[in-house]
Image 1 (tube, rainbow, N blue to C red):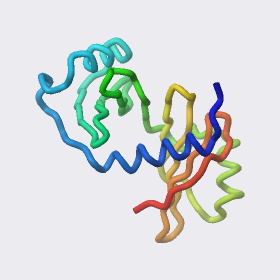
Image 2: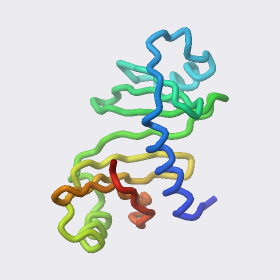
Image 3: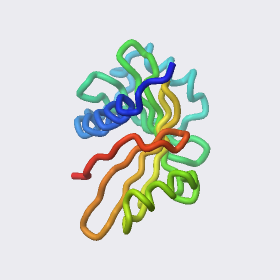
Length: 151
């Protein structure tokens, strides 16, 4: 089922805003068993796993897989919500790079992440120009979803 792109942008922006409110959890006994089990099933090769509990009661695991840093979020009922990982700028699809160049003249992509949700794959980019930094969001197909000013 396709959802409107602005719904995806709002979800991504909300996720970014909530990421600033986290509680580090070093004790695995505090992490619910159902969430640990769901994580291990989805990411059996994850290494160096660190858990945090977000303000919205979701659980976020930061880990390394295939040599890259990832994060995955789970709802309290153990349902997977999203996975994010950093990619090199060269791996950003050309259609997105072209859109950034025309929509944001003079801005440079300085960070790129892939965000995978049940709705599909999206790209989250950080753009810089002089003293200004903004976050922009694109669908996996390269359609513009929205932007957020960095704090």
